[in-house]
Length: 413
Image 1 (tube, rainbow, N blue to C red):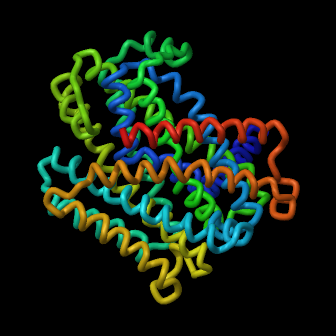
Image 2: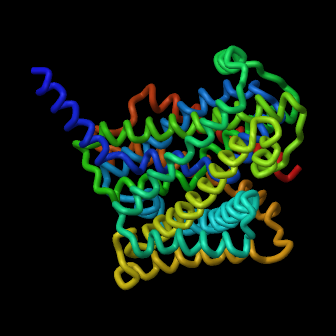
C-alpha cells in the first residue's frame, strides 16, 4: 500500500511537470530589467513599507493570468486571434501596432540591462550585447518548443540568486513580517507613485498574449486544465517572492544607509560594501539573467500575437520556411533592440518612459477585451467566469484604470 501511494504520487508529479511551463515562464519574465529597477528603488527609498502591496498584486496577477490560460485551453486559440474574430481587424491592428512599439522599446531596455549588468563583471557592452542577441535568436530559431521551454525554466531558477542576496543582507525579519501583513499607507506623492510603478511593472500587456499563445502551442487540453492553473499560481507566486526579496535586500542595506540609487545596476554595485561582494555579484547575475530572459520572451510574444492577428503561421516548432513572418519578426525585434543599445548616447530613458506610457494606456483595454471574451458562452461553454469572480475582476480593472492613469500622468511629470 505505501509503495502504491508513492507510485501514484510520483506519477502525478511527473504529469504536473509535463504541464508546467507557460505560467511559470510568463510570470517570472516580468521580473525584467525595468521590474528589478522598480523593486530596487522601492526598497532603497522606502525600506520595507511597500511589502504589503505585493500581497494584493499577487492575487490580481493570478486572476488575470488564470483567465487567459483558461481561454487558451478551452478555445485552442491565441488572444489576438480571438480579438480579431470577435472585435474586427481594425481594432486588432491598432492594438498590435501599439504593442509592437512598446515591446520594441522594452526589448531595447532589456539589452541595456544586460549591458549594464555585464559591465559590473568587466565585460564591455560591445561584446555582451551582440553575443546575448545571437544566443537568444539562435535559441528560438534553431530550437524546438520543448527545448526552449526547458531552458526558460532553468532561467526562472536563476532568479533564486535574489533570494540568496536577500538573506545575505541580514534583514530584521520581525520588521519584514510586520510590514508585510500590516499596511503602512502614506499619502505623499512619491510613495503613491512607487505603488503605481510596482503595479505597472508587475502586470504588463504582453504577458496575457504570451501566456495564452504558449498554452495553445504546448497543446494543453481541458482535462489538463487543473494542472495548468497550478502552473499559473506557482509561477505568479514565485515571481512575487523574487520581487519581495529584492525589496528586502535593498531595504536592509541601501535604505538603512541612506544610499540613493537610480537603476538596478546602481543597487548591485552599492551592495558590495554593505552585504559583501558575493551579494553584489548575485544581484548583478540576477539582473543579467532577467535581461537576457526578457530579451528572448518579449520579441517572441510580439511575433506570436502579430502573426495570430494576421492569420500567419506562428510557433517555435516552425522553421523559417514554414513560418517566415513569425521568424523574421522575432529576428527583427532582437536585431533592432540590440543594435540600438550600441549607438553612443542613445535616448534609452526616453524610450523606456514612452514604452511604459503605452503599457499603461493599453493594459485596461486589453483586460476589458479579456473579460468580454471569457464571458462569451459560445466561446467558453461552461468555463466562463462565475458571478463573484466577475465582480472582483471588473472592480480590479477599474482600479487598474485609475492606477495606470496615474502612471501615465507621473511619467509625463
